[in-house]
Image (cartoon, rainbow, N blue to C red; front, side):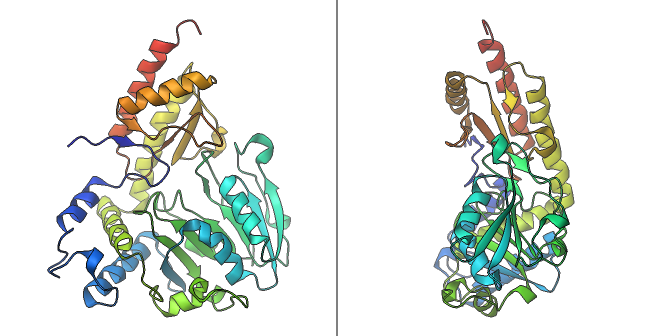
Length: 362
């Protein structure tokens, strides 16, 4: 077996123990006589799978009882519309734009009501996260929306905005499960699974109960959080296999010691890469130091041709999908939970050797 180090921003690599268990159970899961991919989502064996996944996610994240956990589809992108459809009671919302996805979310919400951009970091190409205070928000906003970690630009919120009685909504697609968070500070959290939770096809929504049941007229039934909650995420056929694999990831994290232990590992992994970048004469990180993500590390050489050469040689050496997003360029190493520390160490060694071989004459 020759597996590469996959630095993709998503779909990303999965923990090897999870893949091995899924492989072992691929043809028959739990004495059921069939694969999870063949099970009826209404069957007892599958009910056990989805119920276990929810219970383990609740345990991992310490989700309070007054929050619903929904296993949905459509990616985080569908939530750009679902959130205003369900939460815009007065027709107003505040958005902080700190990257491409929060901008897309704000643009989508404008189709359903009045959107106020409270702050934006577009002035410096999203290399930082705006700092806001409670007084910056509209008192009549239905909710405040943020994207907690910016996959494309490699920045992360180093604080939780204080919104008072206004529900805080967070797109956590690229840093959910990377560290403990206080769920009670949020009205709603949503995340595509394909970065840190499991395969593509699953979207997790964690929503406070008092925020459901207010969907605007005309909201498609499948997008109504109350309908999904009342049907235990099974109004229609859910992403059965993706939920099963996500459940295996939750088990893996619990066996590892939970999110506090995962955070220690992630901080250590990211620190090794950032320490090298800060000392390098060739590579430079693009995010401001105070807002550096421990999930997505973006960097450049300052020479587009050299960037291309690095990405090409890295791929040949087994470090794949390290090219930066097409809208930004440069390089991006997405080092989600499943990336082993060994992968970071070997990447740093490769970068150091590349720098030594290509710094001559520069």
